[in-house]
Length: 280
DNA sequence: CTCAGTGTTCAGTG
DNA sequence: TCACTGAACACTGA
Image (cartoon, rainbow, N blue to C red):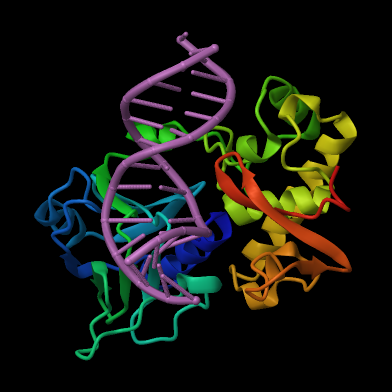
């Protein structure tokens, strides 16, 4: 669920609540999966007493920039989310809504809680435990962040460079769009949405795209990411003509978009929704 | 009870 | 060494 716009929304939320403040309390769940190779006490120690200078993001990875290292890094995985406690959480599409609190008022699936001076609190929850929390000296010292390609929102290359890169790739454009070593931040729905707006069939080999098609792809990425980031990933504010609103269908039978049928099939190892009448 | 689905990593193949 | 594919991971909710 969380793709680039959702992670950017979370980053902005953390900036609003945490930036410039000193952390007075941190609680890290002893989850040996989410805390891949960090100890909960080490993460807590890295946070408490520190001042949050900024929140960094590249692709779907984010990190807290503190006044001392190590910094705390995170990834939301498929079901992770961050919300401010005591306020309404940002609405997420589909089944990704932030987990409700249990009877005691404590967030379900809590993995990290941070409280700053003045009382602001944020909670990182993750029901499916594919999210991660870890410590690193900085983005340049972290192998996972280092592996990423360009951030699609902040550093999308120009058409000519994109065209040159895609010409070297022999797999379907859908699979290439999902490659974080190239298009950092693109996930399943953004890849489908981009291809729909660009009029390109997901199974087309990336190397066969013409310069005109790469131009359309480039424009579609900018349009979709720009809008989704602008509304802080609130899908209720996505335009009605986006595939997004129709791709999951009504549960039964064929779904349509502007009179054309939507096909669902596996491409690049992921469920892909596309409109054959509009994508070649 | 079964299964889809979300992102990343890793094993296996070419 | 690289590109690519498909499975595995963990869990919820339909």
